[in-house]
Length: 83
Image (cartoon, rainbow, N blue to C red; front, side, top):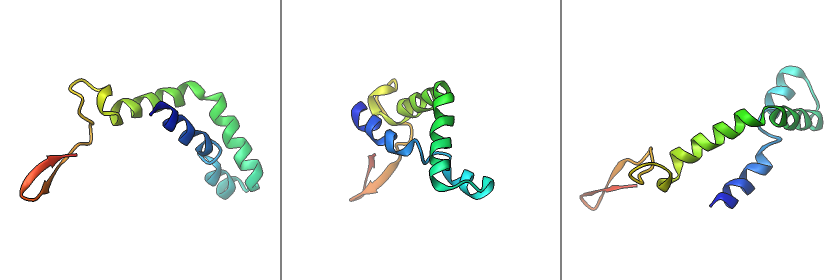
């Protein structure tokens, strides 16, 4: 699961802040992708804390009690099912 999260995060790094750079700063696409990657690299500690916080929220076994934070009861065939 960690490998999946890591591999999914890698392609999203350049796109994290690129759209505002293109729109508001008037940068080209390649320059915005590079600038976004550079900004994320400079603030990697803050992004690591952000990622770990979401990991703790979303992974069922990472929280005490083993229940994800956003679990809701959904009616299924007349019985509520957590999921």
